[in-house]
Length: 248
Picture (cartoon, rainbow, N blue to C red):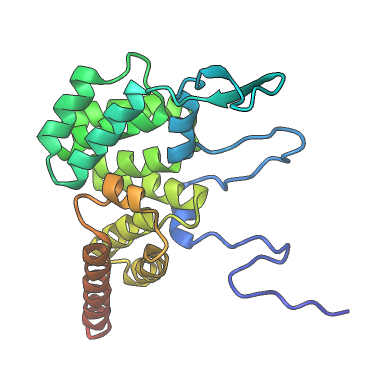
């Protein structure tokens, strides 16, 4: 039986990597067999839930005096989660300095990845790129597959290094729109308009489903609509650059 090769895929059925990834020497990301080495990327919500202490249980007897205690859970206060939520709310309101002060003065002594990522975002937004970069490297030392940390690190570095980390973030999480937008902008500035347009097209498609908290953290202060407008402006610039190259 004759098989047809799907566009954009190799003969083995694996997605073909864009040429710019191969040119940069980014190794393909392989997913291990879950039965052999179950791994799981860090999730913004899950890491915070893991940080919360177990809720204490209280015991009471049923109103009708029935035999045996009835057990119910009473939620315990979680100061670390409260600080994280308050700092995130301040960031969402554009109060970066206040959010950074709150995170640094009252943050947990042993922060989990979500707290570290937020701290790194606040440092980057406040102009402390070196400190933000150091926190991203600390996160990646624990989990080198943390796409959010790769994206933020790319935003802290020069263009040549940024392309690599944006590319890794996009490879590790194919549904992540923001690194593709970053890639498209950098590739356009390098004059690679075709590759840039491909990344920008994909970014615009993915932006509609991007997680709200991810946009708050990693959108550079832009909301979903503003990011989409930026993406379209970059697409138009790609088209113009392509016309200029064709006319030479």
